[in-house]
Image 1: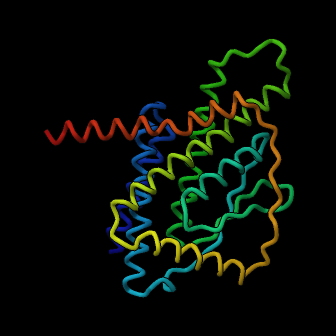
Image 2: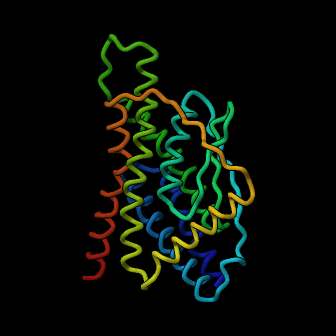
Length: 242
C-alpha cells in the first residue's frame, strides 16, 4: 500500500511541477488532473483508515507557509481559499507581521495541500504577469492603483481555483463508495478537536487587502481555467478509447 501511495504522490508532484513551467493551456490540464488525483487519494486513504479503525495511527501535524513581499497578504488570502477548498484541514493565519498560512491536518492531507498551495502560488504569479502585460492600463492609474489591480488578480485567482476544486471534490465523492462524505466529515472534526486541544484558537486577524473589481474578476477567471484542461483531458481519453 505504501508503494502505491508513493506512486500516486509522485505522479501528483510531477504534474504540478510541470504545470509551473509550461504554457498556460497545458498548465490548466496538468493542474486539473493533479487535483482530481489528490481528491481520489484523499478519499481512498480516509476510507481505508476508517475501515481498519486506524484513524489515530496517522499523526495530525501543523505546517506553516509564509508569503512575503508586496503581494504577501494577497497570496495569503489566495492560500486560505485553496487550503479550505482542499478539505479535511483546519486553516488558520498567524497574527503578526508575516503573512503566514497555518495548516493543521493529518500528515497526508497537509502534505498534499501544501504542495497544491505552493504550486498554485507559482502559477498565479505567472498568470498575473501575462494578464498584466496584455492589460490596457489607463494613463491615470498611479502606482497604488496598479498594485491594487495586481493584488486583486491574485485574490481572484484563489477564489477561482477554490471553486474548481470544489467541483472536483463533488465529482470524486460521487464516484466513491457509500459513506465517503461522512468519513471525510469525521476526519475534519478529529483535526478540529485536536487543534482546540493543542492550542488556544482565537479569532484570526482579518487580512485586509484593497481589491478592484477588474483585477478580481480577471484573476477568478484565470483560477478557473483548469476547467478547459479537464475538458481537453476528457477528449483525449475518448480519442484513445476509440
